[in-house]
Length: 350
Ligand code: SAH
Image (cartoon, rainbow, N blue to C red; front, side, top):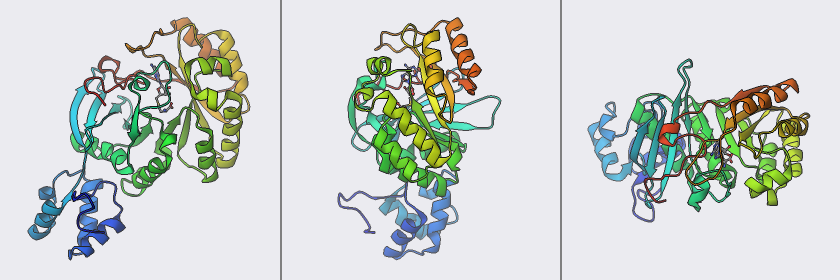
């Protein structure tokens, strides 16, 4: 590894494996043994300056100070909800923005971070604020993991669970998503089962995950029980129709022997009737799956409304009666626009 890369930027540690850090140290006449120390400071102790790496000799710290950086993205803004949820706005080197959300649940020790994989999103779901931003670019694996490094450094706490449910479609950036998962597992010691990747249903990418025997949880934003309804709110269904998606998911569960999570945003008068619930129960009856119902979160750019409580409970009841485990996703951070479908980086342009 060259001291500095082509554009003369400093060596960025975030996202590098121990081997890569060792190589960087050796190539620059530094002790290989120091690599592990730097690695631990960054990934396990969330330290953000070389000065704080107190077990390194001053010469090494000075060398790093001059020639390397820990991260390349910056926290630009932070909002705290009354329920404790924190929404972060991060700025990348090219002045693009993404948001991440940190959720703490009172009765659990878990700290769950919801991270972004793209700047904006190309999928165009009609109910989602992120879609309205349009699409700018994929995040690199390093930019994906830097969201967690910065969140941990900010809170001083260790993130225990990661959901790829922020801005963007993770399965359209699959190489970088998989690379970041590898880093979370190896460097941050976060287990595969504590990681969930959510997709709107990119069939070839789901097949690829099946082939590699993906061990994290796959969540699928289904949001409809037939192709017509789905097409009316999710343009992806024109390319990857409902029935093909169900077939693909079935093969996925058989191959990986893992349950998928079916996400279903309940939107008033669009997909929240008893009929829809029955059709959904039928469509997923032979699919190894749990259901996660999400109450539609209003955002200023979409015309939809929340379902009435009675419909939510009936919907849940019908699915449960069909034998499914059903949870209703707790709404987090709606007062700061941090809830599902509200991430629009609205204070800044992307
Ligand atoms: N592109 C991926 C990852 C985004 S996850 C995917 O589609 O799964 C974000 C989740 O929030 C998705 O299930 C998405 O459909 C859902 N969502 C989007 N807008 C929403 C809204 N207004 N209210 C509730 N959920 C919403």
